Length: 458
Image 1 (spheres, helix red, strand yellow):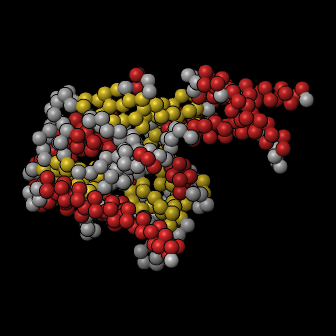
Image 2 (spheres, one colour):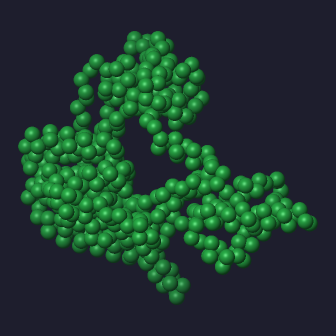
Image 3 (tube, rainbow, N blue to C red):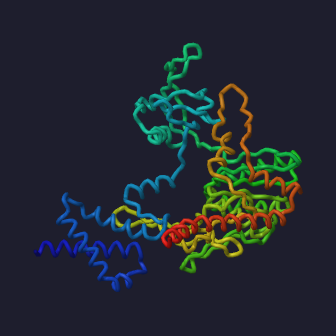
């Protein structure tokens, strides 16, 4: 009995310790909620003594902590020691790769394409080559992610690949001599651009990374030389990335002394402003920004800033609404906590973050387009397939991308930029159509119930 009490006190101490560690300012609340903590201890103790299989107290407490953090939002996260260590490794040092896009095909890790200028491209690795061994380690039964991890490593380190290649005459795969490569920092293509008719420049950003600003500047310089008079900045399916990348890109298009974004949390120290200092290089260039439900984070910061300052009109569908600030803190035992401490707001004070759990706030968050152009995701994905499916072959010229899929969102933006439609007219029409869609949706939701009521009355 004495031992049980000791166990009970140990569990209670552990729970209070973890609650206190997670929320340093909640000790008072923990005391006030002692009854609830006792219930938690009772549950853990009962499970430990009566569950059909033996349980680990540490795992039960970890599960309880996950439950606490999981109640907050979708981005706060309890990190066990292994996950926390991996997070620290991901943000420390510089890791390199080989520059290959891969897929699992017919059970083999297969090269979709080597990327231009990378170690794989320089070594002559070809599309459809199969990778059999990495440093003599058989990868035939590995998941794709696991095989990819073997090929990654520190910049400058070496790796050996054993490949097979299809014989053009027989169609059979045959082993080729092993290839030894030195890993390099891989800079993926994050910007694609081209000139559209009537001097409309088009710039598509895949994400916001450390080198996005440099690539965007190169693209804009090239488009300017080609006679660009207006610009479409396409941020559809752009999941975001670095805050600094978003701020730097926004600065290119905004006048001086303008708010780009600010953060706000419960504590005063979590308030932070990000502003322009001087006029951007392209502060007077007529612009449209394209967004959809796949546009998040940094994409929403840029589109929200340009929209609020009327530097660009936004076309497409409502953005995802992911704009929260997380802080990572270490916990006892090597664990960690990623906790949301603030949210991002547009210059006019609109909350970018969207609370998917609260139906009452369904209309809050995300960037709402000035001109809504509803497109089914499966149809919009087809617009971007040429970027995904492009194949580079060593020794041959880079392929010319062909865009054949219909793109009503881009068409609408170009129509306004070229004066075929007036912006105010397009906004008014969009508002009317959105109201009609909402009314139709409400009617569809209500109709079955009304029919049922009439039937019951009969």
